[in-house]
Length: 141
Image 1 (spheres, rainbow, N blue to C red):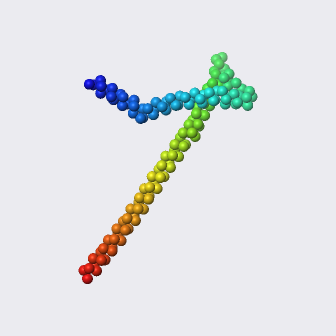
Image 2 (cartoon, rainbow, N blue to C red):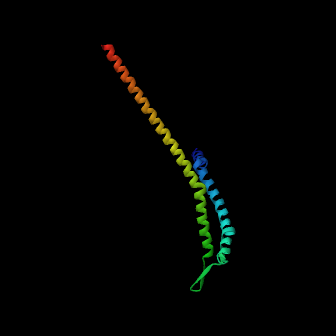
Image 3 (cartoon, helix red, strand yellow):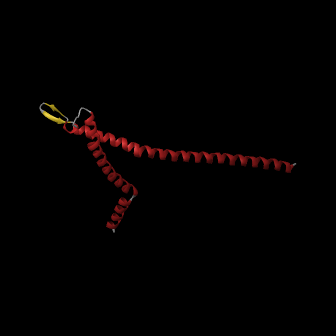
């Protein structure tokens, strides 16, 4: 009985939308990372190295007390990171924020419209009340 309850909770946890969304995001992010890494390593860095004194980024290093420190691959990784962040920002975040803002504007306009309708209804009720009070005064006379 306890095991079935635990299995049901575990099943709910794994089938729950947020967990599935997270798993999709991790897989998508890993695939996206591979594509961006390939773009930087196979296209951008060779173009830059051809344009900048025919530099080979993989062989960039410096000597510190006789020990070579390779900083070329690190520069490649930094470029991959920057390009990834720019692409994610312009492809995903910016359009998502635009959709959210459009939704908020629509909600605000609907709220404003309902406020206007409420004011009209209140005004109509006040007019009806005025008419009723004046007609009741006439009846008393």
